[in-house]
Length: 585
Image (cartoon, rainbow, N blue to C red; front, top):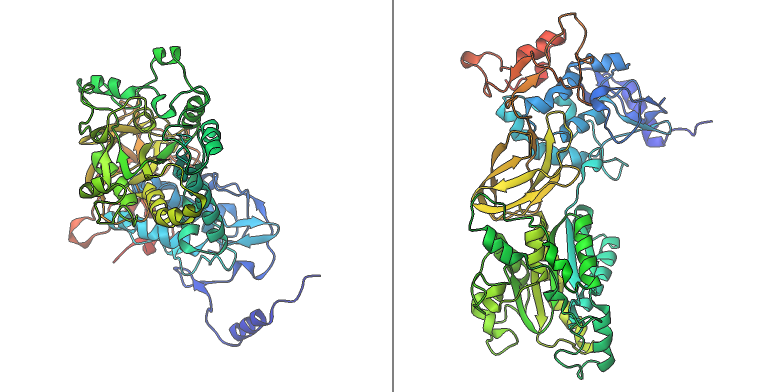
C-alpha cells in the first residue's frame, strides 16, 4: 500500500481543485501540466532514435508535454526541432541542447519514478547558446524553459549532460630532485586541503574538483629523497640526493626535443609540435622514473602541469634550452609565450614572498621581472621535463622554485604552505582559460587526433580519442582551425575575455573531402513517411545521410518585409501544428 501524500501536497491539490486555473506550468497551447513525481510511473524502454544516446534506458508516458505515446512524441514539432538542431545551429551547442531537450520529451524513469533534469544545467546552457538561436532569428524553445520543466539539486535533479563532462587533466609533480623536498610536502598539504574543503562545502573547491581532474605526484624521486632525508634538514648538502638511484638527474633525462624543434622550425612546411622521441634516445640510460612519467603522459591527455623544485624563489617557463646551444643565457620563447607568461604570473602574482619588493630576499634578483623568467634566459639546459611536455604532447608545464632552502625544517613547512596555497589553486584554475570542445564528423561521431590550429601560434594540439580538446589561449581574438585527414578544414573566430572562469565551448563538425560544407535539413519523404524513419542510412541521432534534401544555412537572417524566417516553411510542412513558439515576433 502506498503511503499517503504529504500534507503540503494534499493542500496544494485541494486548492487546485477548488479553483479553476493551472497552478503549475502551461504549454504553448495553454494546456496544464502536472508534476511528474506526483504518482508512480510506468517505465518503458527508450525507443526514440534522436534520444538514443541519453544516459538512461527507460522513459514514461505521458510526458510533461502530455505526449502519451512514442508516436505522439516523434510527430511533435518539439521532437522534429531536436532532430535538426545539429544542422540549424551549424553544430553549436550540440549534442548538449539535444540531450537537454530529450530529458523533457523523454523523461528519465527509474524504479517507477520520473526524475527531472537540473535547472542549473538548463540555465548554463541557455546562457551559452542563446546567441546561436538569435543568429537564426529563432526564439528559445518553450519546453527548455528552465523555470518550468526543471528542478533544483535539493529536489533531487539529475544532470542530463553528465556523460559530456570531459574534465581537463592537470598534474602537479614534486621532488623530481630528491633533496628539494618542499614540493613533496606542498602536494600532501594540497591533497588534504582539497579533500577537507570539499567535504566542508567550499563553493570554490567543489567547483574546481567537479570540473577538473587533478593528479598529484608528491615524489618523482623517492630514492633520492631517502638519501637526502638520511642527512636531514640543516645537514643536507646542496646536491646530496639530487639524482636518483642510478645517479641520473631526472630533469636532464628526458628526450632533447628542443634541438629538433629549432631544426624543424626553420621549415614552414613541417610540423614542429608532437615531435616523436628519436630512436637514439633509447640507446642511452633512461631512468625508470622518466619512463614512468612518459607512459603516464601517453595514457592521460594532460592540459596543464607544474613541476615543484627548490633552491630559489621564481617561476620559470619553456623553453629551458637556448636557441643557440652555445649561449648559456638567452631568451628563447615558445610560440605560446603569451599564455606561458600568464600561467607563470597566475602563480607568482598571488605568492606573498614572490611579490615582496625587497631585493635582498630570496629570489630578489627576479623582482624586476615579476618573479617569472623564461627558462633559457635564466640558464640553459637540455633534457628538461617542461620542454618535453610542450613539444611531445598537448601539455603546458611550468617550473616553480619554492624557496632558497632545499630541505627546510619541519617547523617551516606550514608557513611555506600558506605562501603557496593560493598560488597552487590559482594556477590549477588556469586550465579553464581558453577554449574547449569536441571535433565530430557530420554524423556526430568523434574525430580523434584532429588538429586544432590557432593562426599566428605555430603549435597545434590534437583531440583525444573521444574527439574532445582543450586549448589554452591568452585574451584577445583568435582564428581557430580544426582539420583532420580526409576532411575539409573548419575555421572559426573566437574571442577570449581578460577574465574567464570556464573555457569557452567551440565545437567543430568536419565534412568529408569532396562533399563541401553543406548543412542538410531533412525534408518530407515523397512516399509520405515521417521524419522518424529517414531514408537510406542515418546517423545514430536520426540525421539524414543522403543528398537531395533542402540545403540549410544559405540564409542566416529572416526575409525582408516582415515575412517568416527562412526555416519556418520546413516545420510547417511536416506538422499540422505550427510551432509558433519558435517565432520571436
